[in-house]
Length: 204
Image (cartoon, rainbow, N blue to C red):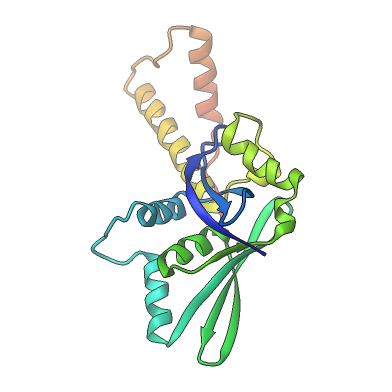
């Protein structure tokens, strides 16, 4: 395992999904992982030293651990399967070690709050995997399996698409022209609106 630190947040050029950037503490190894919008916000608050009046989910979890006498000893980004990264929390409760599966985005957000170390399995930093993870954050390429957004990001995208569709539908109902001068483009949008299916909910 290599110890890593968070160097910042970015935005994937192709998918417009937040990306958290990690770099080896005593080396040059890097890793970039796509995260959900809410997790990116939680990480950003810590990176910028922002204080909020009420605890967010990650703050609440650490408060619960403290109340139970447990502490976060560190987090590990330990595996990658089917283009998805996996992580684990290493907890200490009295003389007992507890390991819990979690998402890398949650692991990073918790580690920053607890000032706990972040470790990445060295096999995840092999040239093919590391370059694939970083490519999406630096160049506008087609989305790959490693850039697959999580359920929260996907739901946010669907909500934004539905909002735009509702705006266009409202304009049509009010008899207004769509914001396109080309009649063929307007016709295609009308057909698209008629063909829209309800957004299906996905489990988080």
